[in-house]
Length: 219
Image (tube, rainbow, N blue to C red; front, side, top):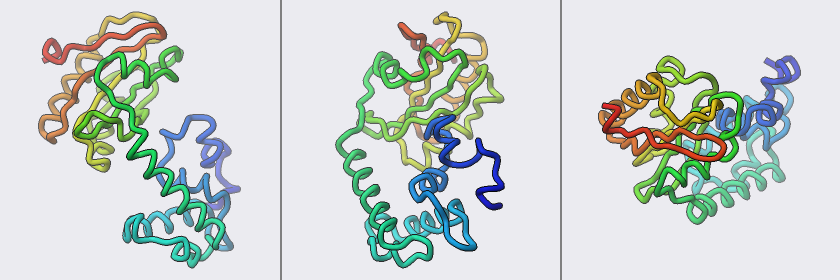
């Protein structure tokens, strides 16, 4: 499919603006950076080709010249991608937020706390409880069909996360967990035990405060 034939809200840049970066796949994020494709290859196909090269050789094994040699990239875009990778690595190593409490989770979810829709967020942590990545898993009323363990733990495996924290906002302002909240917590806790990825907490958020769902009580 040609980019110009896509629905406007499905285009990478428009999708990012409308839903946020967390809703975009890796190749869609790269497509936003690249901006355009080349003759016979749209920007999404081009971004997939570049990602395949980066994954096959590793980010340390690809130079700006290697990227420039890819048809449709060129020297300028190749240099931009290398610069982005270097900056990401620096932020990854030195700028990770450490999560030690439910209050830390509340602070890291400032953008969803007052939303009129429920947002379910997963925070993937390393062995030192630093955030590797935060992903909005779903938007809508929380239930076990909407938040399936597969959707939560697939990124955890890809990111080699050691621990997991989840949170969701209550537009009603109530901090009391619903039966669905408890059910989702149990399912995720059990799945985490099987995979060796600890679910540390499930935090309910409002605009002004927060509450942990006791994992012991949820059993």
